[in-house]
Image 1 (cartoon, helix red, strand yellow):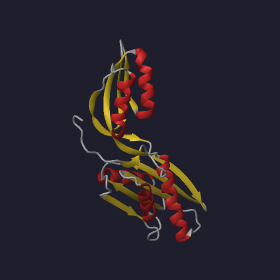
Image 2 (cartoon, rainbow, N blue to C red):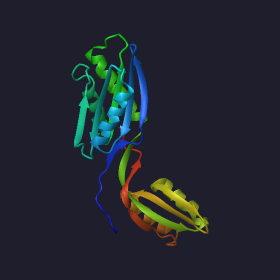
Image 3 (cartoon, rainbow, N blue to C red):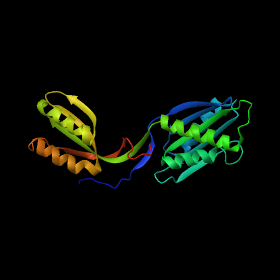
Image 4 (cartoon, helix red, strand yellow):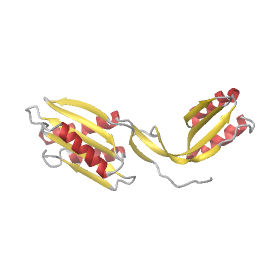
Length: 219
């Protein structure tokens, strides 16, 4: 395919999130952020720390790069191995990269013990990541179409099974751009050609990763 390049699939989060858990009067505020570089992660961490100067702890974990080349965590004063590492293990179990999770704790006066802290920090991290919506960045082909209005419904029906609409313009004809996962692009074009009797042609616009709902049971 013209301009085709090799792109891998990886998981990340779609948006920022914030959740709160109260465990034995301690408040655990979990925040998750999509980040594309280590400086961005550190800048975000500093901002959250400043916003929560009076917190007992601001523990964090981040994994950056498709293969997790940049990974770092901190217990921020909690007993060693009870906060940052459980958060890192949570991110790794999900397979998420380009993600920063910060769990801020306001101590409520009751000690939780090592096991309780591990459960609290990993739980807050897990809930924050879920709230940020896990997506898979999959290689997709970007196609452009011009179709007559009577054929537009058929194209939409196909896309509901094969891909996503990127943009639509309604004028004398319908002009649209769509994303179709690489692994289904050949099948999509073949069915489109058959159902339109070859009257709808696709213009190749490029290839990029596009966020899709994760496959499998690990969401």
